[in-house]
Amino acid sequence: MTTTIDLSYPIGRFTPVEPGTADARLAAIDDIAALPRHMRDAVAGLNDAQLDTPYRPGGWTVRQLVHHVADSHMNAFIRLKLALTEETPTIKPYDEKAWAGLPDARLPIESSLAILDNLHARWDAIYGALAPAHFDRAFFHPEMQKEVTVDLHTQIYGWHSKHHVAHVMALRRREGW
Image (cartoon, rainbow, N blue to C red; front, side):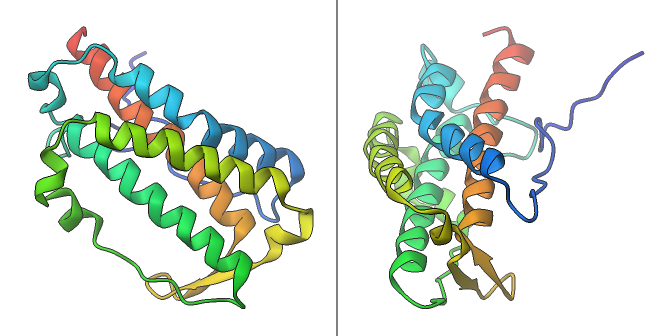
């Protein structure tokens, strides 16, 4: 029996635990905290040609993907802080595909790996200080046309932290790197 892996979703699509449980929340927080180390491990030893290889046909290069994760997680961190300090603020969406085409997406990946190291240290500090009631706070996402709780946001970014590392690791396996 042959199993086909979806190159777009190597760990599967995001499925929320609703309502969120303390265990799901803690697992997501652990996944977010581990992302910088896991991303560094995933890209360790890759040369420029490998970094400029798309992780799937029609997909971003590994280099663009690393920069995307930094962009995405910076936005996520700001959204978390807004949800914790304002009453259901409306967040600003961004065009991640357009961002991946900007000149900074061709920089060495160390710039984004350093962002992830430092950003996730701050993110982890906030999570470590939150009371359970904080996870009920929310922001409004205009593209989704719904409120997103801190709990759901945490689950999404726990998944996102594993999702893109899995892209790199799947490419490495396929290419024998």
